Image (cartoon, rainbow, N blue to C red; front, side, top):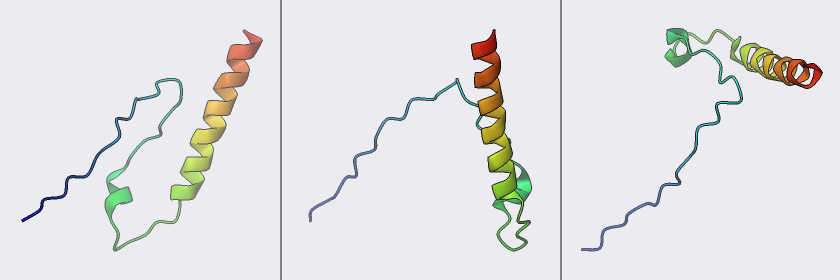
Length: 57
């Protein structure tokens, strides 16, 4: 019997960006809230604002 092993890539954590906040409702698939995309966009804007502040400093 042949066994297949899947190779996993090693990911490095990037501490230069804000990853966002996870809420318990994010894992509830029976009741979609619909604001997940808004929060992702808000977190991305936060990262961009931090880059601007760093370049001004």
